[in-house]
Image 1 (spheres, rainbow over the protein chains, first blue to last red):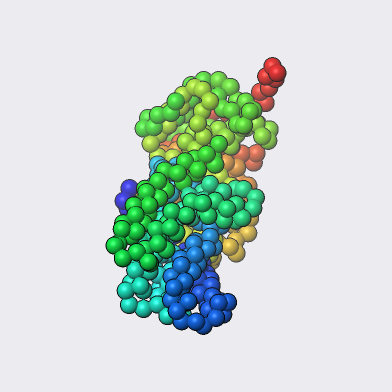
Image 2 (cartoon, each protein chain N blue to C red):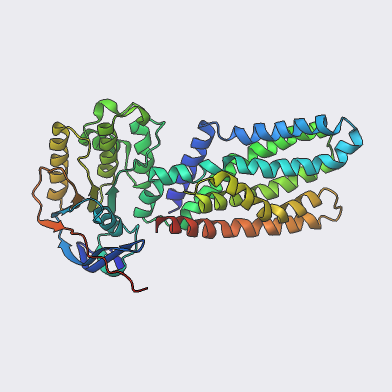
Length: 216
Length: 204
C-alpha cells in the first residue's frame, strides 16, 4: 500500500511540474504582490504594515487557481476507477492527492512569498514569521483545494463555486495566519497549526466521501 | 453483499438500481476458472453497470456477489497519461501492479501496439486507443477480466489478435466476462442476455 501511495504521489507531482501548472499560482502570487505597491503607493511604513496581510490574501487566491485540475481530469480519465478496482480506497486516493498537491503547491508558493516580501520591504523577524505562517498553512490550503475540487467535480461552474466555498473555510487560517504577523507571543502560530492540522486530517475523509458520492 | 477472494465469479439474486431505475433483477450466474461469459442486450439495459458492479465500483441493490481477488476492468476510459508515450504511461500501472518493464513490452505486443510504444497517447486513433486500453488490461494479469465492448473500433486483424490473447488467458485458468456487440473469436461458456425490466410506477 505504501508503494502504491508513493507511485501515485510521484505521478501527480511529476505531472503538475511537467504541465507547468505548478508555476501558475506562483506567477499569480508575484503579480498580486507587484500590483499592491502600485495601488497604495510606495510609502514604506504603509507597505510594511499591510504587506504581510496582502501576501496572505494573495496566498488564498492562489489556492483557487489549480482547483479545476486537481480531481476532474483524473476522474474523467477513469484513473480513480482503475485504482479502486485495485483495492485502493477513495480515502487513500484523496490522501495521495493532498500530499502530491502540497508538494507541487507549497514549496513554490513559499519561494514566491520570499520574493514578494522584498517588494513589501519585509525583512528580519516579520519576514520569518510570514514564511513560518505560510509554511504551516500551505498543507491546509492544499487540503481545502483537494476537498473543494472533489466536492465540485462534475458540476457546471465548478470554478466559481470553488471560490465561494473556499472563502468561508479559509477564514480561520487567515485570522490566525495574518494575525501571527502582529502577534509577539507566538500563540497565533500555535492556533494556526491547530487549524491546519484539523483541515489536513479531515481532507482524506471529506474528499474521499465526495469521490465515493460521485460514483452513485 | 460482496466478497472477494473466491476462485470463481458467482452472482446470487443480484439486482442493480441506478438513479431510480431498476436495471436488472435477481440475476444468477457463475463463471469458473478458465471460462468466459458474454453479456448481451440492448443499449442502456445495464451491461456496463453489471461489469462495474462486479468490479466493485457500484453497490448491488440486493443479492450477493463473489469475485476473485484480482480483477481488471477495461471500459471506455483510458486511465493513461495522454502526454506520455504508451510504454511510459503503462509503466505507472506496472509499478502499481508489481510488474516489470518487460511485462509492459509483452502487454503492448499482445495488443499489437509494438510499433507505437514510443508514441504519445494523444496522437492515437480510436482503434489504437482501444488497443492501449487492452494493453493496460493485459498488463494487470488478474484472474478476472471485465471487458466492456473490447472490440470497439478494432479492425478485423486486431479482433483476431484480441481473440488469441483472450484464449491464452482462459488457457492459463483466467476468467473473462465481456459485454460486446461485435462477435469475439472465443468460445463462451455462458451467455447472459439482459432484457429491459418492466419499471413499476411508485404510487404517488
